[in-house]
Amino acid sequence: DPSDHLQYMRLALDQAQESPPKPSNFRVGALLVDADTGAILSRGYTLECEGNTHAEQCCLLKFAKAHDLPEERVGEALPPNTVIYTTMEPCNLRLSGNLSCADRIIRTKGKGGEQSIKKVYLGVKEPEKFVGDNEGRKKLEENSVECVHVPGLEERILSVATAGHEL
Ligand SMILES: Nc1nc(=O)c(N)c(NC[C@H](O)[C@H](O)[C@H](O)COP(=O)(O)O)[nH]1
Ligand SMILES: [Zn+2]
Image (cartoon, rainbow, N blue to C red):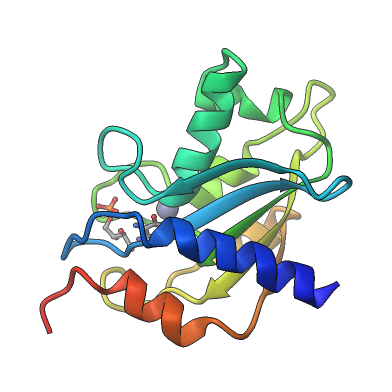
């Protein structure tokens, strides 16, 4: 029920607080959850994993590593009803040119080809600071990944996300 979503989003915000401030991105946190059991499968935050990594990307990378899989095959190890909570809408274009998180989420397929991550719960839409209007949500929905906004933490999410930006 909605209070569970808010609880998971709070945990994702806790992750975002771990992210090192940087003027060229946002500090975001994410959680992979098995929607059938409620179990937290992985947590991640921006720049947690080596390189210029996003929170959602770190969640997937860590879970893949724990199952001896490359990130692009993580869908094979994810439960069939996985959801991701992310404090900010997944990116669809990155100024660095790295693969977007929308694409990373869309490509999570089980061995039978079915979609592993079925739903994205997001805390805020991406502010139009770096890439204008982020079409991550649109791209996800066009690829049968449902996006649900979890209201209530917007101000805190945005203040954490932009903590590394000059005022
Ligand atoms: N959902 C999300 N999770 C993140 O962990 C993160 N850092 C962003 N940030 C979106 C922003 O648009 C990009 O950070 C900039 O476009 C710069 O791109 P890089 O991050 O350098 O690839 N968005
Ligand atoms: Zn991203």
